[in-house]
Image 1: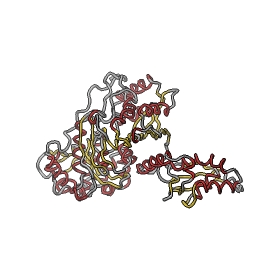
Image 2: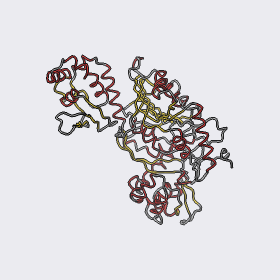
Image 3: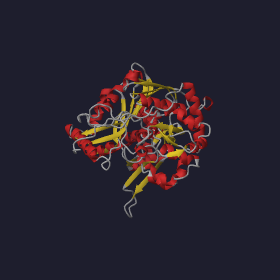
Image 4: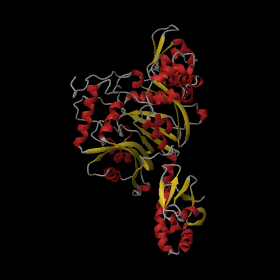
Length: 543
């Protein structure tokens, strides 16, 4: 095959989603039994770490299966090891091992659910998984969760390229979105592009109604199974909402409706459109539009389904085009949307890094398919060249519809590539609330307020050897985005004295007297900085 050609055949479509042939009541009952079996078998995040050991577990997190297979070899008598071999590694186990691991569901029940297939009916006949089923543990702003998630078997288990209709599990982007989402209790939530349903499950914990949409009918099938598997008994009280599933593209299935929260991990991958159909396109990531139009259209259009005060949070990519600052391009989207907007760019890749990331993501490797790799790589670079793309940014977008038809007051675009303290949703919610608190107060009103330093804030001073005064004072945030702010001597003194006893104006006056400078001049310098510290959570109104 020539280097500029790609395979014309694609992997076969995936299996029918689990539970697809069961009536809702039967699915709910069977899923509840399976959930109990998985828990009793110790097939949890901690249980898998136990049977693998730290070295093999770390390798498996890097998508390296050999150490895990060695660690689990001939351990079918351990229920957690048997289930990890079956569902995480795509290996075969004897039917009797699955019957023992899933004591009530058994291999027959697992087959009826559509999660395994067996070579025969004998105890020693092999059983293999037809879906990926793995434990999931995470924390969001509403607290910790422990679930199990089904999705299609990945490249590690199958050893081949993903199918175009592949349904992805909870990957890194999904985990990021779940942790950065604001978890304030709300009425209605929309999960746009639900995939396996992970965002809808998180949203159901703090809302009265959840609508989850996807263009993929298979994805909705997996989401339905996961909702049945992970919904606790009504007496448990954890979930506040059932999940309604709707098929359709982007905002079409909810046109004319209003939501208090919209979350979306959309198909944002910037994929070549001029490759003559030679490149595989994946429903879970490729939006079918040129460049970064999927994200732009969602940013500019999501306001149509937001209730007043409603928040939308999504992940996205955007192109860095030659001669145009990224925040200018994305800022124009915010202007068109007419919403409060806060964009945090977390990472930037050059075109070659971006191409390599997403070609590998689909299961194509230079070792296994060198010609397909070269063709895809060239198509990506050619596509970027047509728009003078010099890099691609990845980040978090938070939008909000102003109350009562008011004008947007928040327009913030920033780059933050350092580490953050997850879950971030609570910090983002507090920052939005702080923005509103500040917007309602002019400088005179701010000066009349009493502020207190947040518990996670520390101060660092850097001195030249022998110097009595510091050259640099840094205020560092331990929570949230982990910001560091260089403070003047006056600002450091104000922050250090902010214990809620004196007003900001009183502190400014005292510091001005100490420094022997006019209080009005010092206030002009300090109050804008104080606003920034309140906005970012260094300072907060005293209780």
